[in-house]
Amino acid sequence: MRVVLRVAQVAVVAVTKPSLAKTNQQTGSFRWGLVFAGVLGVCVPLMAAVLPENRADIMYHAYSGGGLEVNGPSILARKSVGKSTSVWGNYYVDTITSATIDVVTGASEYTEERTEQSLGADYLYDNATLSLSYTNSVENDFNANAVNFGISQLMFGDLTTVTLGYAKGWDTITKTGSPSFEREANRQKYKLGLSQVLTKNLLLGLNFETITDEGYLNNPYRTVRYLVTPTSYAKDDGEVYPNTRTSHAIAMRALYYLPYRAAIRGEMRGYTDTWGINGSMAELGYIHPTKRGLTYEISYRVYSQDSADFYSDLFNTEAEFVYRARDKELSTYSTQTIGLGVSYEFKKHGWGFIDKGSANIFYNRIQIDYEDFRDLRVTGVDAGTEPLYSLSADVFRIFVSAWY
Image 1 (spheres, one colour):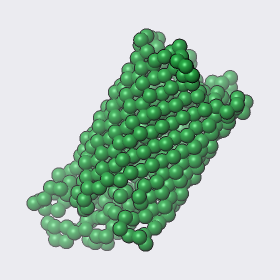
Image 2 (tube, helix red, strand yellow; image 1 turned 90 degrees about the vertical axis):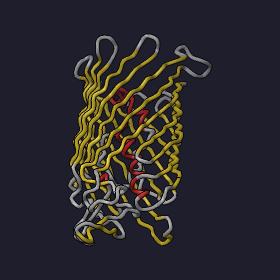
Image 3 (cartoon, helix red, strand yellow; image 1 turned 30 degrees about the vertical axis):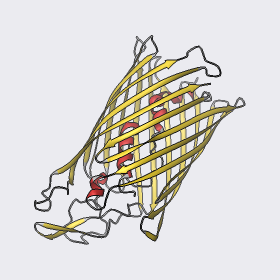
Image 4 (tube, one colour; image 1 turned 90 degrees about the horizontal axis):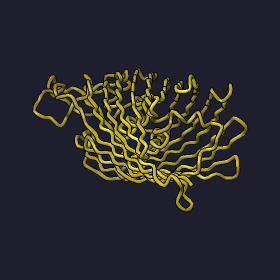
C-alpha cells in the first residue's frame, strides 16, 4: 500500500537529500543507499577523473516514527575492470509495517516488502568520467524502473568539475484489491553541477535540477474530506491530481577544511514546482577525525515548505475544485533534523585481500510539524478544529565498508 511509503521516503530524504517537496509516489530514486554517497558526497567531484576504488558496503537501516516501521539490509559492491572501467551493483530491501495516521483513519495496519536492484558502470576517458546505471524497484502494488546517465569533466588544472546528468523513469501503479486498476507514470530528470576548488581549504559546489513528471501522480488509496454540516465531515473516493508536474531545485554546498584536520560542511537549497509548492532547506555539519581512526560527525538541518495549490485539509463541498488533495506531504510543514555519527577505520595496513575497512553508525532525530493537516484520530470535536498533526522519527544506519 503506497499510502505510507512516502512517509518513509520523506524521512530518508530528510537525512540524505533535501528535496522534501518532491512528494509524488513515483520517486524510485529516494533510497537509503544514498547514505554512502551522502557521507562524502561533497568531495566526489574532486575524484571525477579517477575511477572509484574497489569497495563493498553492507548496511542495515531502521526507521521508526509516526506509526511506521521500516528496516532492512543493503549490499553495494564495486569492482574495476581494466584501467578505465568500474562496475557496481546494489541490492536493497525494505520491510514495512504501517499503522500511520493515514492508515489507522482509513484502513488497518499492514506489512509489505520492497526490493530494489541496481547495476551501473563508470568509464574513464582522459579527464572525463561517463556513468550509466539501471534501477528496478518492486513491491506489491508498484513497479519502478529508471535509467541514469551522467558525465563529469575536469577542467582548468583539475580545479573545476562540470557535471551533466539525465535520468528517465517509468512506473506501473496498481491497487491492492482492485485487479483492473493499473496506471502508468513517466519522469525525466536533468542535472547540471559545478564544483570549484576556491582555496586549498575551501570547496564549493553548485547544482541545478529539473524534474518533469507525467501520468498518474497521486496515491490510489488516499481520500479527501469535505464538510457535510458546519460541524461534521465525510470522505470521498479519492484525491485528484494534475497529470503533469515540473519541479526545479538549486543547491549550494561548501566544504571547509580546518587547520586541525576537521571540516565544516554547509548546504542551502531552494525548490519550486508547478503545483505551487515552494520549499527551502539549510544544513550545517561538522566532521572531526582523530588520530585513533575515529571520525565524529554532527549536523543540524531545517526545512520548510508551503502547500500545493489544490491541497486542503477540509474542503467545503464534495467537488469544490477540479483537483484536490489531502496528502500531508503536500501541506505546509517544517522539519528539524539532528544528526550524529561515528566512523572507525580499521586494518589500515591490510588484511588478506582487504586493503582497509571502516565501521559506521549514524543516527538522526527528525521532528515534523504540519501547519494545516489535522489529526483525525481525535474525535468529539467540530470538523476543522482537530489538533494539528506532528510526528517524531528515529533513523539508524549501520554499515561496514571494505576496500580491496
